[in-house]
Length: 220
Ligand code: SF4
Ligand code: SF4
Image 1 (cartoon, rainbow, N blue to C red):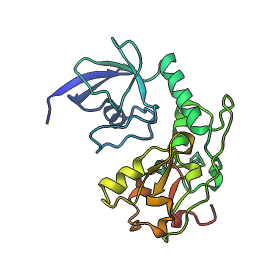
Image 2: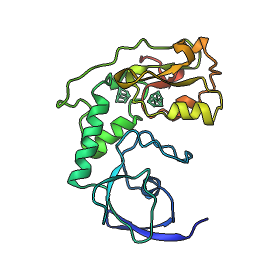
Image 3: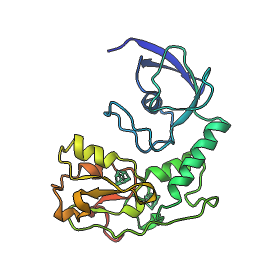
Image 4: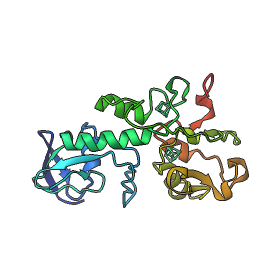
């Protein structure tokens, strides 16, 4: 264990292990920082969702808290006009191609997007950007879960769980830009892939893109 140090986040003094990622230190101390792609066990964060910005005294601009390690005496603010601007822009971009429909979504009331919107007083239906709603067919070809790419935020957590927890390698990302999506090898249905239906990918999905069929009931 590294030595313990002291930092201040939003005026609250916190003891933390030197070298840990600021994001996890904040979350473990009940200080909310928006995030979608972060995985505690992952050694090198992907920092792809661009939601976990904070300001640190002495730094010229906001930094992503998942990539920032804590150091003694660090003074952090999770809310500043510049942080809020960056988070709002990233959140609106994420939702610009998201197929909303929370009441019929299996993740309703347990969704990371809903939590971020509530905590930061952001709208799930941003008006600033033109909406390009995804229109992928839903893959419900396996018994245990459903993959709805129209609700995917491309966080990569399912791919990491498939590769590093399940150690199967059934899914990955294919295509680039707005066509980027979670795919099986050869873009086949899950039932025609090497998926073993262990559900590890479903457990880490922060939104309603991967969901257990038992949670659908009257929804879908
Ligand atoms: S993924 Fe979240 S924001 Fe999207 S429809 Fe489902 S509950 Fe709503
Ligand atoms: S399916 Fe879920 S876990 Fe996988 S990339 Fe999309 S949102 Fe993330």
